[in-house]
Amino acid sequence: MIRGVVLLGCLLMGLFGGSVFAADKLLSDQAEISFVDTSGNSEISTLSVKNLMTYQFSDKLLGSWRLFLLRGESDGEKNAERYATELRVDYLLTKRLYSFAGARWLKDTFAGVDPRYGLGAGVGYKFLLGPKHFLLGEAGLTYTVEDRTDGTDSDYLGGRLFGQYDYAFSDKSRFIQSLEFLQDFKESKNWLMNSETALTAALNSFMSLKASYLVQYDNEPVDALDDIDTTLGMALVINY
Image 1 (cartoon, rainbow, N blue to C red):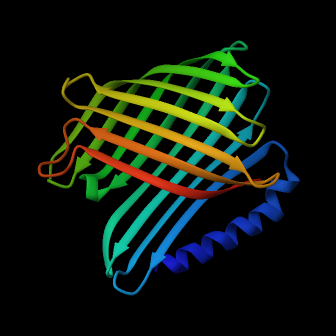
Image 2: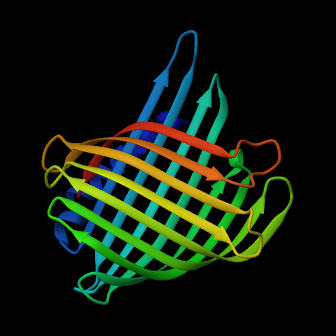
């Protein structure tokens, strides 16, 4: 099944890359795909796909749509499955200050989430604008509705803090470190933290290699599950 998804994904990226994105400069897309398949003494398959599509509605208004898929099998049995998507709009108030609003959806039964919905809005500030160093911070409010695999559910108002630092070696090669903190205002012990460390190196004008390390921490996971998930990966990045 994973092999079929890989072939379909590559075909779709090729079709879109050659038509839609070339025709409209306001629309851009960045796709990441990594696939591991072993056979013999161990049969392990892992597929990870990320996609970020953006549209520049005006000089001040930017829309974005993120997709994420992770699926893993070991000896024919599924051992990882995570799906997520996010829609967001950003409005530039000044050269450095901006506001944003968005909606998220996540399903990860192996982490006890089945599923989680979220709405959020806030403000951000660009502390460093380059050309080598980029730094931004965001703060906002969130509203979350979550169903868990143990049969419990919850909805709560919360807060979000986010920061990201970029160092650009060139136009296509850069180092990125981001950190996100999500707090439940109803239950103080219920909080999440997400971190990504990534290094991207350009192969040509539209293709890059990306090494990344993701850390996802849940301070109150579903019973018997680990509170931390980590992912170390190497992906091919295609920019349209």
